[in-house]
Length: 264
Image (tube, rainbow, N blue to C red; front, top):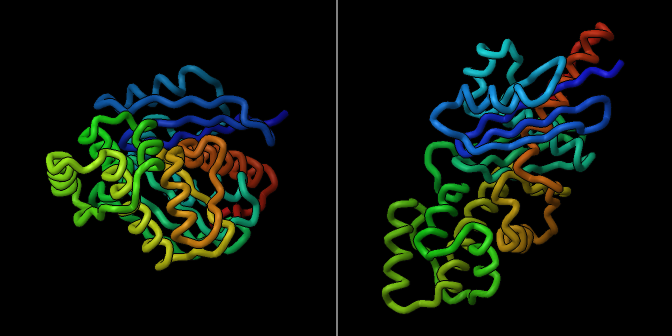
């Protein structure tokens, strides 16, 4: 009988759950993170059944104790999820709500190098959200507007506070909102591609996280790297998928008596 393995990715902006049984994904769920983080996790887990749980994300220490779960770093979870979706991938870019991660893989899903910006929201999903609100767009509208914009402006600051003031100033000067939106996206793409240049740009490159739902960022990052990036079907769920697969892998390893390969 196949084990039902669950992965819980507890992020600053949302919590994702994926349950796998054998080679199939049998359940997925996502809710926005609230101040009651423990209750958020309980809501998701109560709606499904599972035999083994692995947690990841910034809230994993809380869940590890509360739910008697194993935990893994986001780096490892995203690497496992990316390898499952795109076998042989060599590079992962994750732009989440509060951080950005660049990960180099060895072609078999093992992490060989990574860099993570988690000290400020510059270039992450929260930055996009603030800039969209400053321009009067919803997040889906923001990426579409940027695709219509011209490359006539350049954002000078990536600090969310200063950038918001700069954006408001550009609106006051009468600059087109679409052009400002494009400048914001260009700044994020430059920052993300610079991080990748320090870690890895070897193809295939997988782009995940909530920002990978943005068509303008996909286009600009691809242009900056000079190659197409691969986007999972549901990019925000990649960490939870990786955690679920690691839970399944650990169960198989325990039954076989073989140690789990590092980074697998």
